[in-house]
Length: 390
Image 1 (cartoon, rainbow, N blue to C red):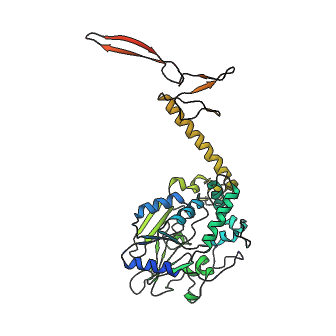
Image 2 (image 1 turned 60 degrees about the horizontal axis):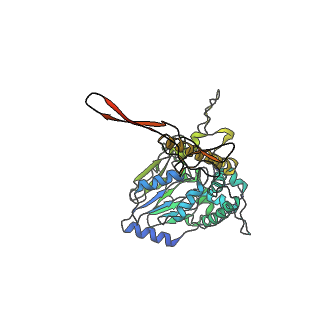
Image 3 (image 1 turned 60 degrees about the vertical axis):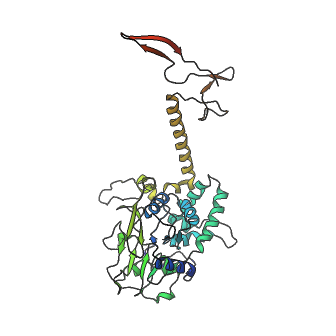
């Protein structure tokens, strides 16, 4: 979406504020506690957890996610589960949540909305199936519950000196007359405006990557236009968890403007794993689009089933490696109906004729004990190693 019009024939509602949250945040700021604003997480769960760890939150501190918690990244289901259960995280609705909630039907059922699926929703859908271990019914029920929660999120929060919103505001309209169309979708009309939309408040927003906000690629962007008290008129926080310059997530203390940034972790760098990086003659190489022009994590493929198969293979290989290492150390395993497993003390093989028979484990099969005298080592005894059952 490159303009104010989202072009998706979406139902667009009015502004939604939560005055109880606004009062709580304002009180915490006045009491000297910290409130952080965080840009678009987009399903990068491991990196988001690492960022929270960097913040070293105290019990009275709070984190406000500025929308777009889901889509594109590898684990949107995990992100929603974390933020719903975390007492210190507050969320705003973003345009990706707005698209996702169109999957909730009027009769209360869930049916994936295709325009959303084409714009990053496949990775979210797949992550819920992976979370449910392939149970499509359970995945849909969880999505239905989560998306109804997302739909009720506020679109902006207004404090004494701060505004928090996902996309921004239209400088051509009275600020208090704007709704979801502006708060969730606006781009150029907002960040191309040089002045301030609210002379008394700094606006913290995401949605537009900072690669488009001057020379700020991969970094938090601060407006060059200042308010009367010397603060910037706006702060852009979508540094791009999957951009090709410096992928990361960022948080800003809304009182001190201190920036805390967490580079995208290797396990979340799906854009590098799918990147073909083919050089095309006469054209610039595509920096992060993968095969089939894929612009979301691998979990989008086959609605998460491919990811489940891959996870199962990784688990099997890890178990086998651990088993081999233990056998080399002299630990062997007990028989199970479906094969050898870790957990016992002997390893067995099945004979062709009669049941299970003992097998000598890998490695040395005997050892000798020596005693040292003044001239040479004398052999005391020889102990053969046998495979007795236990």
